[in-house]
View 1: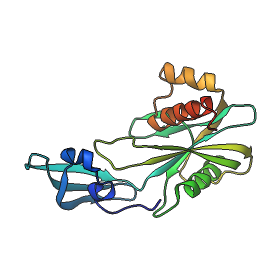
View 2: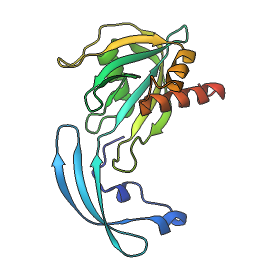
View 3: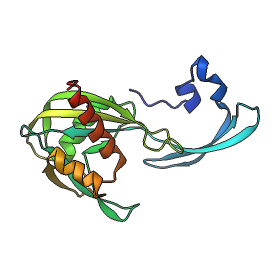
Length: 199
């Protein structure tokens, strides 16, 4: 899926039945543009005709991978996340390059971060992690038939890999050791699809 530079309203126009809830783009300005984040401020027209301001972050999107070993364990990472000042437990993931296909990004990120590549890939759908202030979409994938290889981490990227059973991951979510939204969502989607024999 290509990264869309259009306004959110243009990118995902509401259907006729939802039109009464829509906010219409009037004008916009760029506040900040960095390597990862692009902050904009838009003026919109509300359903009642009044004007309002919407500040939000434009994001290229990301891919998150539920990588499953033959014994049913799933691959996890421990990585320090500076904004929170702590090490987080997460599934492998990474942002899309501009106009990059989400599956290609997932395959690239799995290989670069962990060294593994997978023989089979299945989509688990997508999630919107912070709908109040970002247009970010995280594409969720299940990877199986893992084959070990050599990771190619960025020079300033540091993480540890480990594997855990679904029961162990569920316990880590339940007791707060895993709080990362994409990891929790991907795990739940993987479990639901597995229960309905969709995987």
